[in-house]
Image (cartoon, rainbow, N blue to C red; front, side, top):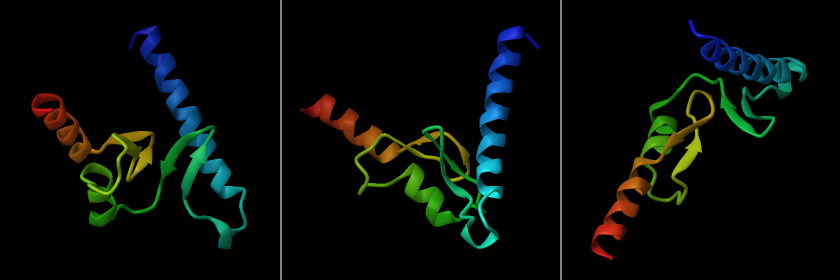
Length: 91
């Protein structure tokens, strides 16, 4: 593995670990397993079809990048990508 890859992997593991520690430091009844760590969204709950759908195909959300339905970071709202392409092509 190249040095740059190792750095990226290390940063990703550090952020994921930080989000887990953030949840574990909360009292058990207050753990939600989703939120933000240093501004980056995370969701460690068991995924549901509805949450995955709301992440990847959501006409009611105008954002192109949406918080991931599982894990850490962002996913792409493909509905909004399609909508933006249609607007660009057809005015």
